Length: 291
Image (cartoon, rainbow, N blue to C red; front, side):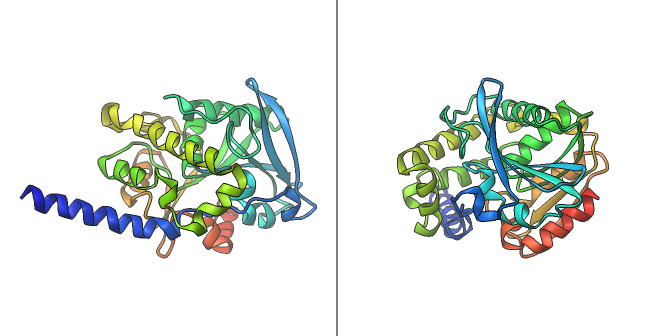
C-alpha cells in the first residue's frame, strides 16, 4: 500500500514538473525603452531602501502593477505597460526590494515579507504623490495586493489579482519543492532570469523564496493572509487560469468566498502567466473592471 501511494505521489510530481517547465513565466530583461519612449523610470527612497519603478500614462486613475516571485516591472508586465489606456490610467510598475533593479539589498524572506512588501508598495505610491491607487497583483504580487487592501483600505480603490493564494497546503508545498532547483528548469525559462540576475543570485534567491513560502505551511491552517480577507473593502476581481499548474483553483475559490462582493473570472485556457499569454483579453478585462 505504501509503495503504491509513493508511486502515485511520484507520478504526480513528475506530471507537475512536466507542466511547470514550459509554464514558468519567462521574463524579458531589458531597459525601460524597450516598451517605448512613453515609459519613464526612477528610484525613490522608501523605508530604508531605494525602490525602482516604471511609469506611463496620464490618466487620473493610478494603477500599481505588483510582480510575482523573482519578478520586476519590466519582466512581468510588458504588455500592460505598453497597452493599458494611457488616457484613463497612470500605470506604475514596481520592483519589490531585492528584485529587479531594487537592489541592493539582496532579497530575503522573513515571516512578514508580504506585510513588508505591502507597506513598501503603498509608501512608494504615496511618495509619488498619488492620493489613491488601484492594484493589479500577480502571484506573490496578488498576495501583497490582498495584504495592502486589508491593511490600507482607505488608500486602495480597486483590485485585480490572479495566481494568488492565501494559505499553503501539502499540494502547494510539493509544487514549490518542484521548482526549488533552477538547474532542473527548462533552458527557455531559466536563461532570461540568469541574464537579469546572474545565475548565482537567481538560483540562491529561488531557493530562499521556496524556503520562505514554506514557512507558512507550519502556521495554523498554513496561513499567509487568509485572516485578512474579511478586511478587504475595495471592489475586487479575481482572475484564474483553469490550466494554472502552480496555483490550484481552490485558492481562487477561497479568496472569492471570503472577500465580500468579489467577482471571479475563469479563463479556460489560462495558465499562471495568463496576463502575458492572453494579454489583449486580460487587459480589456482589467480596464473594464477598473473604469
